[in-house]
Length: 189
Length: 148
Image (cartoon, rainbow over the protein chains, first blue to last red):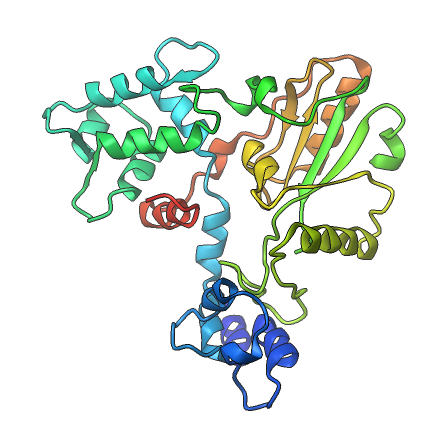
């Protein structure tokens, strides 16, 4: 495995090869903003080291294969919320229900939840990991306000109710017409 | 599957935001991988979708192109790829986990067969089995979605 990674690191990134072939007009080995006709936003996304030029090192982080794999295995946030915050087994998770459960877990009444408070509530390890990962300063706590923001972000129609996708036909835009509907989501890459 | 069940089930290919564009969080990393740029207008996205179906031989599937607001991908939690079966009542009869690890074409076919036979669809692929990330990695993922 290590040998494979070293081999891949020595090869030019396909993304970089694509860009330099397409945009490096003067063939000096880098792409300047003036050579790049697409948006400045796109340029900035490509210029990962922020030095104002597109160069091979902007693609150096592509080798983080382990990170990539684990990134793709992140569970659906709604699933985690439903599993850990629903009180009544009803069809969805209400905002008030969610915030009550979060506040009830705040044994110290300091407006935030620490690892011990999560554990005391018997919440699943997955949720603990999720909640603590939101902790911006690494102090081991997540504020109730941050958790409310999580809910509001997921509540796309703003009705204060999160429904698992399995139970939310009203929110799903694509509807069947006389036959079951098979949806295949994907992209070219 | 479309050829086999297309008479009894309506298939739709829903083209959504590219998974591995060169400007993306996970650009192509291995030699030989397809390199495309992330469409920045709806017209570019439609053109990319048409190129995708043509080069992958998917022309027979009716195509839906998600808007630049990624409304469909967000509503169905479908990025980077996912399979859904919607029953006649409009509810989700079955879905797999998010791709690539949750992608489950075998389960999809079983669900289609059950729907055609008028049976209850099999239980969907459980997402819980995929919880193997660390807290820090989950945080990166969360922030990549634009959360504060």
